[in-house]
Length: 287
Image: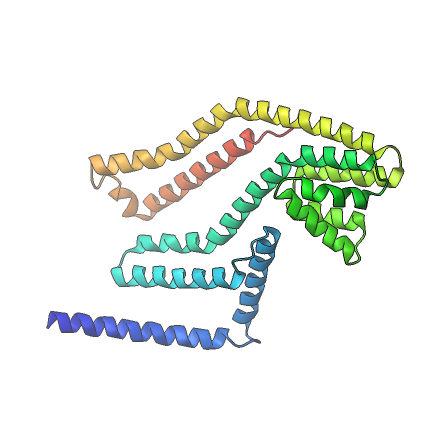
């Protein structure tokens, strides 16, 4: 009898979940509905991020569908198992694609910055034999490392379909969002507009970027100890809570049995998060 009751309960929950899902899908699939418009906007945002990362084997719709499936599974597991802590997975699943794509953009940006010195030197040498910056960029594109060659190749394609060199370079800087690259492109654009020896300008820019990279390395080494201490202090309160709860079960029960206790929890969490954010801002020293 217990097995039959369990089967009937599981069947009822499954039918209810399927009905809710099909109803929501019918509403969301209508092109004029608000959920569909938000869905299309979100998928378009993911597609734009993926194109900026030159990811061609994955689509924004695939990522969004995976998110929906993961959210449904997490919600069903939390309801069926009666474990409210599973709800904590919902914001993680919702924010995961944006965080992963931003992380990949930062890694790609650092790889672009690593190839800037060679890019500037190659363009400067090309300008010694041709006065055209477009020809110099075309010559440099196959000689520079990835992923900078992909970004420059896209800029050259924009030039071939009608954009000016200035517009293509500005679009390239907007895609990558790198301060050293912006400084390099600014040197090229300003040199083109005001005239002068562009080769000399690029060589001076390369020397300046090398000095900036050296100073950034010194700054990172000086702040590395403080960042390590910040990580320890950020994790330490959670470890203390776990240790006290394991050593004395029920030690924190008074905090969850009254409104005052919940207020203390909220205030303590807010102060902890504020302290971590403030420490990160203090250590975020830039040149």
